[in-house]
Length: 315
Image 1 (tube, one colour):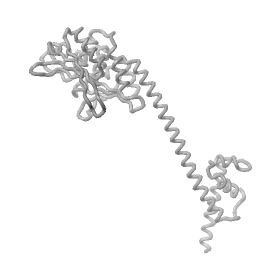
Image 2 (cartoon, rainbow, N blue to C red; image 1 turned 90 degrees about the vertical axis):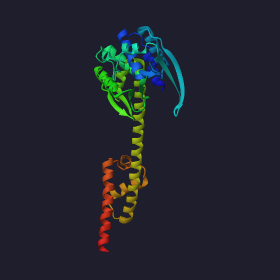
Image 3 (tube, rainbow, N blue to C red; image 1 turned 30 degrees about the horizontal axis):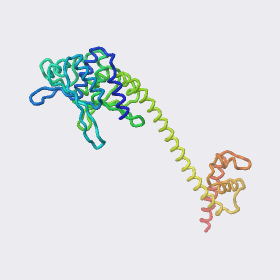
Image 4 (cartoon, one colour; image 1 turned 90 degrees about the horizontal axis):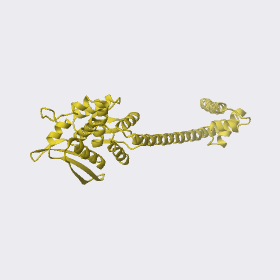
């Protein structure tokens, strides 16, 4: 959660956008954070956030650019994962007018199911701001070292498709999907996640996320290599032990009836049960290659097997 908090704090601190972009961000935050709803026969706008900085940004922007007062409050509740705090931004007076201004309602006073048309067909700055607002409202990002994802939970299927199309305009491939009865837009590619963080304005968090991800990948690779080496050592030890048992049996079968070079190779295996073939080759007198020592042990075992069969036929 620390990384997610850092990302949202960094995004909420951005203050160099144009008024159109700020309005687009505010609209997306209200759309994804809750939107227009009836309460006691009165239309209100209520947007909820898990970031106090995001809630404060929306409250300030609504007052500055739309001249509407907001009611801000925080709530705390217990969940299986611990105590969580949520921050509400509520507009009661003039909520319908604000919904018209921000595109939550169309000119026929109908609720817009996706994103407002002015944003969808707007300039790139508005598209970036809309993604930023959606992320501030319902965004999540994986911790470094885990399976990479950046995800936004969407209120409707239409908003998911609109957000997916907006990502495409930014040159990023995002996937709209349904999961546990909720609509989501997800990025899985680590490079795409890094680009989206930078595009939204969280450059510092992008560097941190990428750095920690690289460290995690390096540790994972080192662990895989260590496990691979350990598995190879276990396999080599098992093969050496099995070869030693076979050589011992060959000595019992052949007795003195074996060439000196094969006897010397077999004796090396018995004397050094944990040594690799390459090490046995170096211990030979004179030293030989591992292929040569392997060949001599193989011929010793074949001779033993052939001798056993011949004795069985004679018997």
